[in-house]
Image (cartoon, rainbow, N blue to C red; front, top):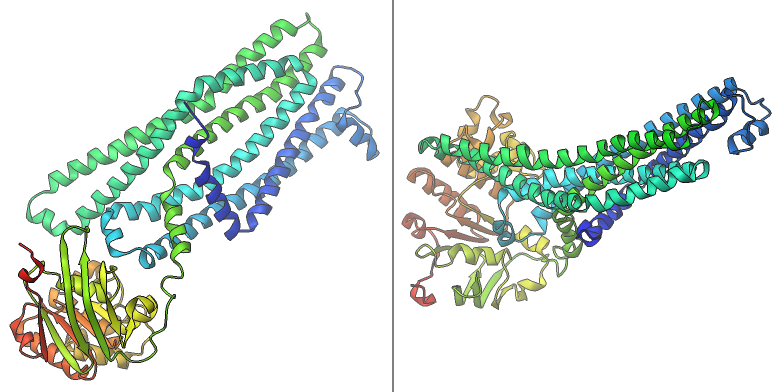
Amino acid sequence: MFSLKSLNLGYIRRLIGYAFKHNSLFYLAISLSVVSVILELVAMSVLFPLSQLATGQTLGSDFIVRSINFVGLNPSIRIFLLVFISLFFFRILMMLAGDGLIAYLGKKVQSQLSSEAFKNIMTVFEIQEIEKKSIGYFISLAGDETARAGGLIVILSKFVNLLILSFLYYFAILIYSPTIALVVVLFLILSFLASINILKTIGKLGIRMVDESQANSSMFLDSLNGFRSVKAFSAEPYVIEKYETSIFQYVGRTQFLIDLLNLLGRLLPLIVLLFVFGCFIYFNGAGNNNADYAFAATLLVFLMRLLPTIGECANVFMKIISDAKAGKDVLEVIEAGYHHKAQSTSGKDLNEAVRKIEICNIHYSYNKIDDVLRNFNYVLECGNSYALVGQSGVGKSTLMDLLLRFHLLDSGKIMINGTSMSEISLQSLRKKILLLGQETIIFNDTVFKNICFGLDHNLDSIRRASQLSEIEETIETLPQKYETILQYRGSNLSGGQRQRIGLARALLRQPEVLILDESTSALDQNTRDRVVSNILQEYQERIVIFVTHDTSITRKVDHIIEIKRDELDIV
């Protein structure tokens, strides 16, 4: 059965709270919309005394007539028509202002949710949390989900206005014809009972729509990122067929079914309206009595506004169910930022230089079953360089991740200058320790901005970092040198050039602990030797750690740290 719980009221309440908290103009927008609704009902009420005058009847003493008398005007067909037109004119102006403002605020909420979700994904979530989800999940989250949430704010506002308008129209009909009002109530009850299954179906379709959207995004992006592999394996027919099947299921079936059910919700009241009005004429018509027919025509106008408005209410309500059932994840990501906001700044600031890092009897496993590191101990001191070696899978990269608190230790502790790393703020820690991996992310931007990577540096300091990473000469040969635009994923650079851009990016930051995890693997031997020598010379008073299999690097460093499989009981 349909229930309020299935409507996901918690999500709707939190979304409205977020929207109003960050956009106080919503109060003005709602007020304008409500005023416009009231103006329409007042305008429509003018039709009753207008029909009385048109059929030669004596005017009653309703609100409209009293108001016209109050301002000193003589009630006439001309005056009533002018009042009707004027009220509708202001109704449209208020509606334009209110709906326009709500539409703007809906888009603003979407952009706020998208930017804040992206910020929290980047700052709050741990690496293992990101890796558990598909790339399509996060693309859909910051795209489709935020668009759906922003749209939901708009249709919630619309629903409130339609609800108020429906109530006011029904109240007016109740005053003028209790019989018709009773018929309308019976119709609404029967319609609601008949629509329960439709509501449940739309809710299920909304959830399915989100899953399919995420799957489509993943398929599209995975194929684009793996474009070279797709071509190399002649797998174009496979990915094309898979995407065609997926997008047809999403757009051609799920979205179509939702639109079809919504269309039914809009048109059904119009069909019923003709039936109800026919019954009214049949049971209440009195021969050729023009007064009765004028009254009936006026009620018809009200019904032509009431029933389609109720139908639109039902349509919007179904849309709310669809989007509210689908929505949730984006607000959870936003709220995760509130819960973890203090994490990066909590703890002590590491103001002094890093002199010593003590790794004390640490233990770590990814799934709490298979050990990656167990009872590992070591001391790293400034003025020394280290090579971390061992077979693949023994935990070299994991150890480096632990030094940056990408993961939390199962047991043991890591001390920096005698202070437990857990007591140091993440923000302070990651200013001191920098990890550069094998793959360098290149953005579709200038060489200058790719090396800066968010920092504010002058060209001289960037050139110095580029010289140390042996990329300066290559940059000088580019068409616009440091202002040359790099293509998507650095496709106009070689693998070694991309790595050296990454090295320049790391060296520009001048960390006190520099960790290079296979960061020179794509360089030729001569270039690698020069780069490693430059780094060791530049960082001779700091701590440098190479995670590597390259024996030419191990011969250059001061100490070799070897992790063996048998020490971890890894088979």
